[in-house]
Image (cartoon, rainbow, N blue to C red):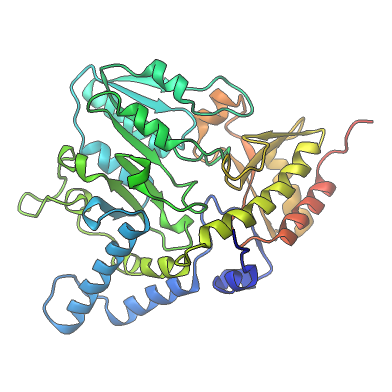
Length: 402
């Protein structure tokens, strides 16, 4: 694996030129300068309705189509298999409104997920009289979605399984390929995966994973505030169209795109692919993130008052660089506010439940109103920034008992 040119990478992000450490990347990454320029250029020169025959109209339509082609290429899909929308939450809602199952069918929902991949399916179960089975690991500091537990939940009535590729709290990576194979052991059962917390860190190949539905947000992958939902061509016919009756309904965009995706944001997606185009880029990212999470995990796990959630092992096959913890006897909110005070607000960590309230309360046993302290790193973060955070935590965290 090659090393990452961190200086060159950081120069691609205008926001990184300011004196701010961005450790809230799981909530949204910084945006590539090329993406910003693309959005500006589109709005300045080609901001017209798609489909027109005049010159600027043709160019606008071409840019939009190129955005779809790039987004599909990024995950090894075809443009017909994807739709772009305002958020992963909205795309899952749209998908749930377009699926229909017989009353009494069973849906299996992970309790380690962001609510985006839970609420839609809970609502669908209520609307269609489906039975919910919760995929809930035994409460611990390192809960995982295990295939052995999933097998106990599956039955001939299973129609859908919803789970996360990587937890936005724990950082733990799940074996989606094995999960997909297990789910598809039930005839007609579908797998829906939330990859929002995974996508910024690793290369995605939906065909290799074998998933039916897969979603993530580009604004957490260095791009614009727009998200992607994939539906395998083999299941497209099971997705009903939410569009006007007189419009086409063969592609996923036709079915769920509802008046089209945001033009200027869609047209900027090729800029993300250009940045991530090097054949070894993700290997380099993985090596760099291993170093970042090794340093921070080593410090946190050695602290007597700190409880780390998720994998303590920095192995990049087991986790991404999203690290959450609590401090015994202290509120997460108070710790973060003290960090803000010490640094003048320049150390960007966060506290809360991060829309994973079921995981926080029912599996980790924490108060969802306070939640965890989360430091979520990506490849443009530096070793020096991690060391700065540790220096601040040395000031803020309670001293070990003697």
